[in-house]
Length: 562
Image 1 (spheres, rainbow, N blue to C red):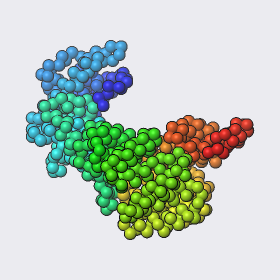
Image 2 (spheres, rainbow, N blue to C red):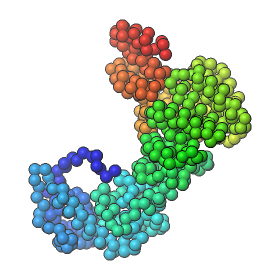
Image 3 (spheres, helix red, strand yellow):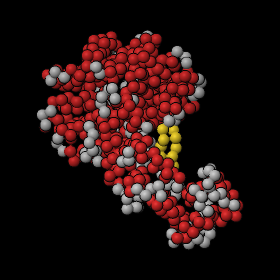
Image 4 (tube, rainbow, N blue to C red):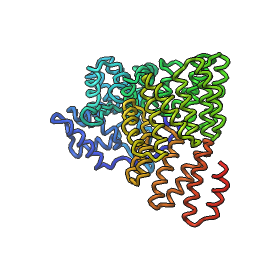
């Protein structure tokens, strides 16, 4: 934030011809009352403003309101700016000169705003509040919350400010989904933040009042709409997370972590949770934070942090004599061990350490979750019949009885996995499309939706529908995992793309993907199973190219032992 690590790129100013055209086009677009400059006036004004697009944009807004070029220049002079025509050296306009021109141009618009439509204190404060938001801008609902303006005033305030080029309004979408988004130029926002009306702390608190209930919403009837609202403000979420303190925010860490798991951005959430954890100490909140860090560390690609945190979480739960938390911590440890290929120890933990606890506590949901984890391991060991029995007889009835549509959909997906592995593709595809996708779409769970799209693509791929499968991989899966920061699932998706390219006869690009995109991630994660699978696919390509000795070495040394 603040650009302290940014690389400065020198950009040439507009040509005089383009600068005058910009000035005249924007002024004339304002209507019949606009004062469109002559060519001579345009050249004089553009030259004085250093042909800077933002300064020209501000000037054009004043000409559009009927002000003459000379009147605008007179107001610039009144700000104390030296109005000698701006000169360019070898490296363009001097930065301090450019900033002086832009600052003076902004001051004219700000004074006109305060004397005119914005002569109300709350409207002035509203514009400055937006300057403390994300550079990419904000939508209607979040923007209104940041400004603390009633809805009836928010729109007129924006429109009046846009006429003076203090902000930009953009309409996104069509029909019922059409939404107004507002954005401030980075320099204008910087100038506004220096004004007396500026109060960053209050704005961040208002953003928290908007985000916290939405990311914490666990009500399955309203969760989908709440999540979609947050999904429409990704830069706003990152901005708020970067400025807030989660240990002080009024949000449920558990529910917020469920949101983060499904929607990202893992890195930003993980950084905030890690910062909050030490201050929480040995409390219930500390337990929640430890669980959240371990949960997101796996997805963000740091299994060692996940394991270390889960083990510390288990110890803390034991000291606090919290059996439920201890069982959850053990479950996280088992999941990490399972991802590393240690299936026997993971199965032992679920059966010997977790099941007795949840049965003693009469925790039916925890019991069903644990049975599902046991079924996962059995399924990975090829014990499909027992895994299917657990899914249908132990898991599914519990979630149906509890009305947990999300967990029910996930379990249906696991059943479809087994059916798919047995070749029952039509029924598996029906479950994906009818029982899973609609639930994830309604709940706004973008991660599970992407996972389901992947499995639909798997079925299409097995039926030879390669083009549609490839489209799903590239358009519906990959962008989601990149946005979430889920390095493991991104690598897996890259591998599925490589599978299709290989089926189409392209060996070079799949080999590059295997070596550069997949292997390094699985090695980093300690995911021995997927690493071995990827090594096997590399051997397939080498074998097809006639490199038999290296392919044989990989089979014997990298695949078979795993």
